[in-house]
Length: 371
Image (cartoon, rainbow, N blue to C red; front, side, top):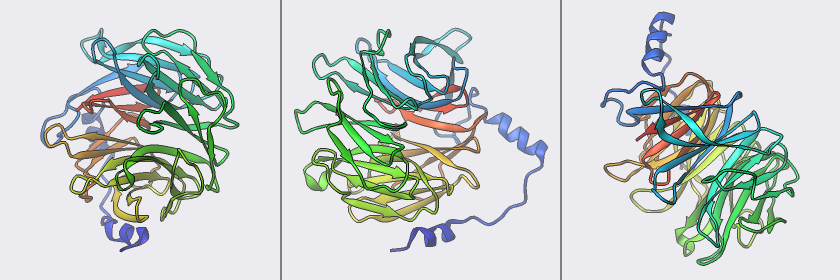
């Protein structure tokens, strides 16, 4: 098995002459996010809608389905301390720009984490937001208003959020990545104090993704990425030490995502880091499966997974500080399938529940990209 360093050397493309500024500007203008692209060579995202209301950069995005209509709803969290809920198809200027349904205000720090879940009692959608004010707020994203409850026991900046189910009939659980090097879990509906605190990282934890371990009866697992350059896998129900550590990045890990290999059904973990690389890992063995390089000299800040609408195969989306978005086949590896250039750096990505759209946090706005 090749190391991540060996894969990086093999995958490094030859140097090419730089394009002229005039040619580069034409290419970037052709890929601005509000314009449709031909198909092919752009197989995804033919239509994009701008969700812009914040006054500062978007640091978190997530989605849920409207309980009455099933339509996609989008949530964005901003460095202006506010969260927004959108109907991305409710546009008023010819179909390219939407207005928020709700503005949620209670945080006093940058919102850098979001997750949605279903209320254990009513089944209604709930939105959790985590911020640099060391708090998690839980909201009703359908009706807006004040937070339903606030979790103050985080202890440090909240840098990532996800959810999982504790057992077959257990309540939804929130899991937060924190800047104090820990990961903590709460009962998402009523919990005030952490159910578990998971330790093992040596630096800030920034990425968190939950998945079912098919080799262990579908038991919940959480993958975490840290600025200590590693990805770890924990049991979020029983706690304890990390079940697996995946090392190979040469700089801090910013984001992780989980998906299942198309051929085997085995779980896979994707990680993006300050070293410009996206790596695909086998969490059972800790080995790197693929190294995806398409963001040279940039920070990979966000990842999301959606299914190909024709084949159902997983597709991985990565966003970076150099304003690029790449789409990959994470099961096969190799070069990116689609490359986009946005108008500002890409800090957050999320796929809709049905996988029919991807939301990108770009600058101070969200971009709803129809698959």
